[in-house]
Image (cartoon, rainbow, N blue to C red; front, side):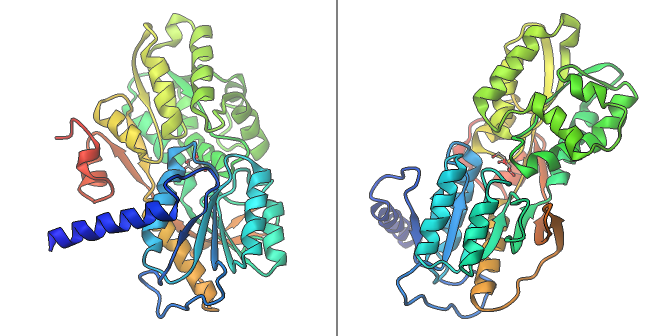
Length: 387
Ligand code: GAL
């Protein structure tokens, strides 16, 4: 039985390599023959030769989105619908071209995670005009009523979990706090920051933390709730743009201008894993930094290893399998002419977008094995030093 499974697996891998022509360039479509996802009834076979569901993801440069692609590929093996995945490589023009290419192939449903939430409105509108149902995936598309649905994690909870982790690790007063954020073009960056600020601000106000790297945040530190414009000012100063190098350069600049007493045992709000690793490495290399607590997000493999090794303190695990299944089930429901189930709605500045939201899990050294390996999310063999 085991042997048969292994043979089947090897065969499946060989087929998928052939399908990709042995390479996966940026915009190479990943096509999947399909069948319906687990909780839907009979599949509707596509006989037109066209594509039923188009999926557009923001970039291959951030491991998070490779995780999503992998999980889509796994989930779509079970469907009978024709699906194509395209990457936009951090370029809104490319993203729009991708959407247009998918429309030309006859998609009925577009699942899109925008590079830039506002700029993607044009792509969503182009799809909507052709009668395509638009599902925003993970990141909301803003300023348009052309978005039908939104599948997402609870992003405010992500930020809260990051902030709370720093609070739980801090003792005494005057702890140096360094704030970093995601890209201002990503609506989630605001939600993460909003969540983190909601728990950190009282601890800044009571002197537990002292902000060391943002004059805008210091100017607003007495405000429990920030407006979007106020958050923009802070994010403008401490954005990483979701970019490892930008994160590293910013951290280096902050440490260069910081005095010795601004270092010691430091607390760092890093918005996601990629930036957490480069910020952590930068702080670790500073001789005046005695210890650091740094947050993360996405449970990227490299960060799981950092957590095991004690180089990153925590991550927020977003089980991409759930998000992928929600998105596919939503698409299949639409393809069958039914109305998908939603759990709430998000204001995108133009309309209330009906949304399905998923919870997140905090992972650190204490539960990394249980949450990510024993749960079957990653194989233990991908890591070293696990007990
Ligand atoms: C966010 C996403 C995060 C993280 C980040 C960087 O929008 O929700 O999980 O991946 O982008 O790509």
